[in-house]
Length: 152
Image 1 (tube, rainbow, N blue to C red):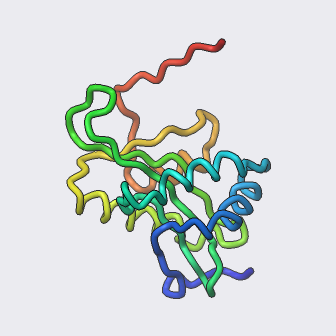
Image 2: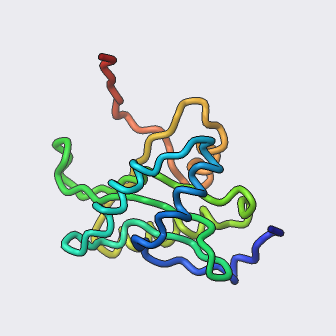
């Protein structure tokens, strides 16, 4: 796949039938296959009773080439304002560096602003320099929130 022209990419809401493409992209990017994770995730995100456009896919030539999954939180963790979280993002390695992740992110931000979300958060692995670079590029910065873990 050669470099993709961003004008030929469309962004739309995630659908259940995107499952196979998302699992394939995730396995190419993350070097492991997580179909059970995506089955649960898609079931929750595509539930029409909670349909907030918080999860998106990018298509090129009728083929899914990227995705961004997020959720909206209203008051969770004692935080009074509405926040969103990006928990999964992936772009087909053959289509990376074409601006697809930025397009997905910009559409996500637009959708979140429209429903009154005031901030967006995400978590990344400490040593994922590529992902850290992307989130830095689109304006993220470290927060004063402390992420705690108990290994059991």
